[in-house]
Image (cartoon, rainbow, N blue to C red; front, side, top):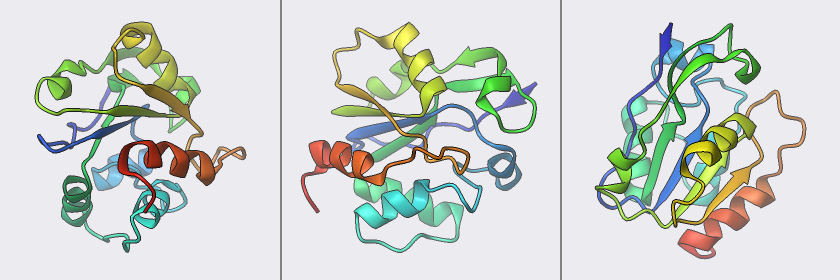
Length: 158
């Protein structure tokens, strides 16, 4: 059984980005989106016009500075490799941990599994949410314009 990461957020977080579960590479470095070919950090830092920090602390500081909360819908599970399709016996995140402390304006769900699990439990949350194209290198249908448009809804055009 594998365990995911704690959420990264503070009282100033305005958008919550939810992935599915950390990849093998992410688990190796002990932080979100650790696979060098995952588009997440390039997309998010690029949106704000910032360089990607090479350290976990630098990435956390970036998230706090920009009002971005980050977590995964699966907090623990059985998984083979990194494929979402192999997730079994998933424990789903209790998002109230974040909602009770941060004024989240929008939720962006990074990929299909994240969206499905969120929808099953939180469909009537009362906060706008949107399924996003997965930033995974395994997703050939990734479209950064969709991400930029969703971020604009919270942060305005940068």
